[in-house]
Image (cartoon, rainbow, N blue to C red):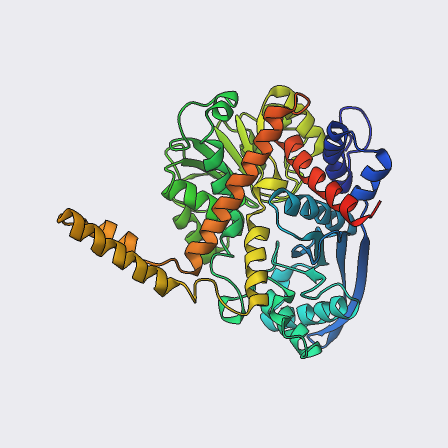
Length: 475
């Protein structure tokens, strides 16, 4: 397939680099320095055999480090049939910019294994994962100090637990072994709120966007987030949590859900939890009773709505469908769902796009909290929670004695209750996403050359990265 200019479409890495180039131009950074920042530091390819059902299968995996200006380098590991070196390197680059945007002190990394996890048993997946982990550990691409993976497409808590246990057995002397991965089960060093973090972060971004009247007006909206018609592509971990929160807490109308086997449409609004339960039970959305099924799910990206949230895979909005997108606001919950060429079209049309490098940074933000928790060897809130409750109780008693008036029970509860770990995680995530949006908006407000959120996000990231490189004398 060729783009409108008649040339071959850009690769994922080229697309990311072209988007970064806009920021390099705005910041007037020397081309050589720009090339150094964009360059991938190292990529490891491994091929390893595993015995499955009495036969030897050879698996191929990658781990790429885009930048190590901050350590450890951070980024997920995905298991999918679409994984290749270009994808892993592009995602590693996005991680570098993502961490910088939200002020998480990590470099960017990413990993992937070329596999269809649905075709293997749990025991087989454990053997494969542990062998992949050994390859990465022995070659220096996995440790709590230098390179810390997390879940991504096709992986989750169980894979992270297997990897952490493998590292522990290879390095029993490392007291910080549990920090070698994030996204672990809570019982094995994980942190409450990590599973929902990326989806919740998406919602925090949208709430902050709608707090700024000028941003809302520029996008052609009036009023707040409540009541807006939303289409979500992908009801995986990220899409599910984002859609559920938007429906239940923000009173948005989720009118369509796009999945690999089609789409569900109901203009009156869909019940996200009911759809998720149906998918878990039936392994498909086909047959769900309270919506219209559309076989060509991708066509629903072009359906009329206020907000479109692509939360599935990269390269979903291309020059072939960008002109037909009707949403006034696109919120990129997935990595790279809009190609560079499509982004150019949408920018010219005036469509507001909140970019992936910022929007889905909630996952790495809470991974940072988990990593810090692992290195500190204590859960957040353990030392101060009861003290805060005691102080709240004293304040409540003082207020009651001074006013001689009864205080409603719900206020008493709020004043006395101390924050637990989940409260603190959500508070830190909300604060991170809000402050990052304000930095992005400040760039747009102060620089006439920047009129879109993606370029502003990259300007924020690259300005921080380039200053870091200058400080440590990299160039």
